[in-house]
Length: 241
Ligand code: GLP
Image 1 (spheres, rainbow, N blue to C red):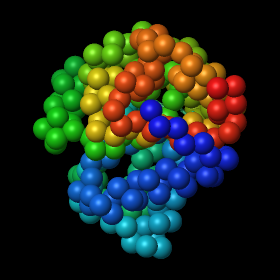
Image 2 (tube, helix red, strand yellow; image 1 turned 90 degrees about the vertical axis):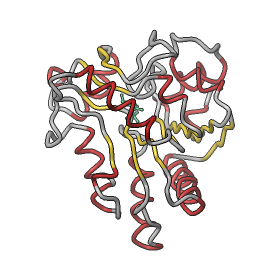
Image 3 (cartoon, helix red, strand yellow; image 1 turned 45 degrees about the horizontal axis):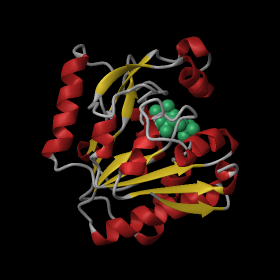
Image 4 (spheres, rainbow, N blue to C red; image 1 turned 180 degrees about the vertical axis):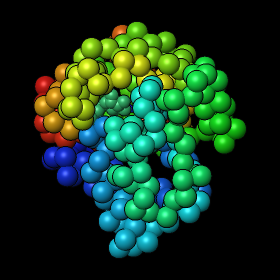
């Protein structure tokens, strides 16, 4: 795993955006795996600025998002569909038909999972997967203990993940208890992976990731076995490593 250390959140965001923009220049038909949460927001802002300034095109890009809350519709202000629309898609030249996010309101969630996984495979897989990391090492919504062989599936969210994400909701009770997420195997299958980490809240996770063993009790640890994974992390996140 390659590690790029940067000064702060702004530098991390800029470096990651530049990484994506460079790939887009070489491969306009890129398949991007996208993430939500606070971490990639700055990256999306830079992609939007670059699109406005330099016109980098997304006309041929296909995107697959990692996850979605179960029970939240596309219109819900806290759905990841809405997040992606507001934070990126509505600002660039990507048609929504090119974007894929699991549906958290399909009456048959197993079918939703299987179809999502198949769609990624039929598309030829993900070229570049952007990832954040949960403080317990989760990637997507794959909580500790998830099999490294897992494909897109339904998960019960841990209390700590619900608490960490409660800041976007009016109360913890409103945070869904389940989500649909690409599995660890689905993520690992990506040709290239870019994991971002910023700030004190990610210190423990970075220590466990970089100094610990590869174990299902720390989902992100599998990335150490990926042939083409890069971490862009800031000084604060790497303190203690
Ligand atoms: C959420 C998301 C993850 C994200 C993680 C960290 O649970 N499902 O994809 O990486 O939290 O979030 P943040 O970037 O806000 O710290």
